[in-house]
Length: 532
Image 1 (cartoon, rainbow, N blue to C red):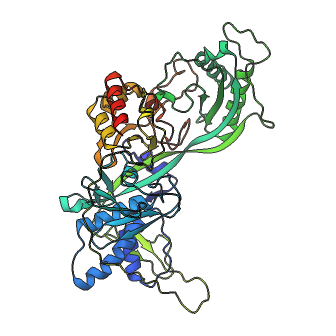
Image 2 (cartoon, one colour; image 1 turned 180 degrees about the vertical axis):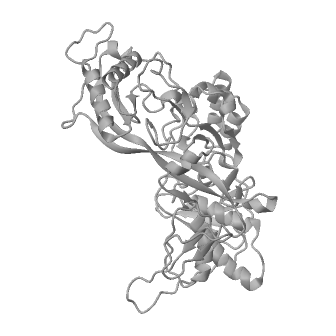
């Protein structure tokens, strides 16, 4: 992330902090007859962790036994899974149920009857939206999954998980931190859309775009002081989704492209003027070798030829703030006190209030009991193909990574990072790829046109039989068409904002699909296929 500046703070519309579980726990302990807890911005697993802590602390208070790192780690690990519903199942579905035990272990089961959890599918979820799979930082400390274990239960739909631990920051002389988040308005947007089928124009589309920017600059030379504009183009069919990370060759020319022109300006009127002028330039502009003089741009959407998109937001704060002891908690608002309340010195950062709704005879009592069970050690899993994955692999004549890996995906890991996951369906296949030189930092650097030293994390995770790599989210800075600024400099940017191509980064894996295996790896894969 870029360093935090005073202007980032001043320009932020609203700044929020990701609450840890402590404010929830303190509110529940103080209002133990609660029915519903409605929380503001929080670390996603916090409500799940808090409810487990609330129940466990009630029992530990009676026995005066403190919670262990294994208990807290298990609660947090469960929360990381449950906040995504049954995404950890195969096929993925909407809802799941977790059963929590005193020692921090838990069972996870999907509620859709056609879905099931497997050790691999649950372990693979550890990679989802994370920069790395083994150490997961959060409010107040780290979740350590280095020794996590996943056991298939007898119903073949439920997985028992244990082995996670939580290390608090303060136990290693570091402060408790929470993450601050905020966005600012960087301008207003307008777009226009249409298609190009002429191969002569497609072959020189970058130069044509630069000419359009120069034309617009000539038409908007005398702007009032403080006004500004930018113009970028999404070229779908070429590199519209991956942008500068596109693994395809620069010389590739598609048969047709769908183009979205995106204008950003200091006000909505100017943004629309830029988009409208650009649309006209695309329709009637000339270019070397032109044959068609009737128009260059095809569009079939009735109504306005340019569309106002309103304010454009961009992340400006995504930073940690250290807290003093006690500031991570919450206090109850006094009668008549505002929704936030005054922050007193060394007092909790967060607040709560209670509200009674309805005219019933009284609140319902929710009684939760935590069963006491003995956890048996898991039976050793036999190597082999996990049948829960779709049978779409090609082990008889494999040539590409997509032939041997059932899951190849990408996702955002916070606003500034893109993470790539490859999951294998058998231990023999996983070990073969792990021991080969196929999935390496140098391969990622070549494929995504980045420097190897810029890779954030890259490695294998045995529990999930998976490989993960996390890279910065790059985008080329778009200029305003003045001389020397036709093409911008590539920089790390947050997701969303001007010229975003893939907010969730869910389509950035495409280059991995066609990654060639190599003859030596192919021969070993064919042999594995015969054995399995």
